[in-house]
Image (cartoon, rainbow, N blue to C red; front, side):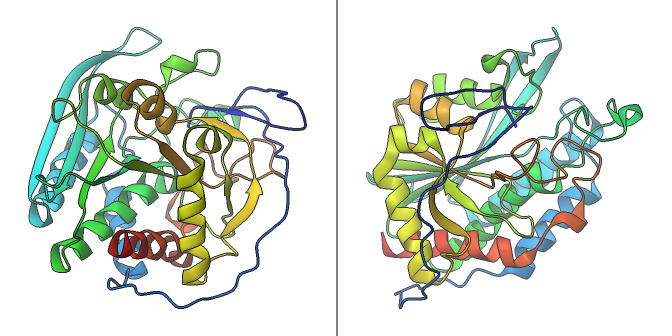
Length: 323
C-alpha cells in the first residue's frame, strides 16, 4: 500500500506510510432498503479464498509462494470466466530488483461494449517495515487483508457470475508488484497496474468505470470517500455508496471524505483514462491511517472478518446485477 495523504481543510499532505488523519463530514444512516439483487455473495466462500492464499505463505514476487499463487489464481478464474489472460512483463523496482510481473485478467462477455473493471493486487510486501518490533522489519508480510481480501472478493464474484451471467461485460484484473515501493517515490508503487494501464490486455481497452478493492476484509472496517476517487470519478463513488446503502451496509460505506491514497486506481485514471474509485479501509484514529496490521507480520488470517467481506462483496454483486 502506497502513499496516503491526509486531507484536512486545505490540501495539507503527509506521506503515506506515516500518518493518516482524515477529515470527516456527515455519516450516512445504515438503512436497509429493498434491492433487485440476483446474486448472493457467500462470505464463507470468500473467507476460504483468503485462507487458501495465506496457506501458500507470503506471495512476494520472485518466491515459490508467488508462483504457486499465480497458477492457482489463473486456474480459479479459468473455471469461471469466458477468457483468462496472464500478462507477463519484466519490471524494475526502486531498489534495482528486476521481477517478472504477472497480471491476471478474467473476462465475462468479452464482446460487450459496456464494461465494468474490477481490480485488486494479489502480491505481498517483501518487508514488514511498519511492524512494532524492529527486528521483524525484514520479514515478509502475509497479506491476509492487504492483498488477499480484495482478491478473494473478486474470486467469489467470478464464481457467482459464472452461474448467473451478467448482462454487462466485466473484467477482473488481479495486478502484481503493487507493494514493492518506497515512501519517497510515488511511481515506485503499483508497478503491475502501471504496466497494464500502458499495455492493456486488449488493445484500446476501455471500461465505463473501474472499482479497486484494497484492504476490504478486517473487522471494524469503514470505507469513506477516498479523495482521488472523488476527483476522478465522483459519480461512481455515489453509485457504489448508494448500492451499499440499499443493501443495508451503510455502516460500512460511510458518507464522509477520507484521505487521498496513491493506489492502483490513480494509475488507471491517469494512464488509462478509466474513471476508477478505491474501496479502501482508512482509519482516521490510527497512527498509519490504516488497520493495525498494515505492513506488519500481524496481517494474518485472524484479521479477517467474513462480515466485512460480505458487505463489500454483496454491494458489488448487486451493482453488477442491476447496472
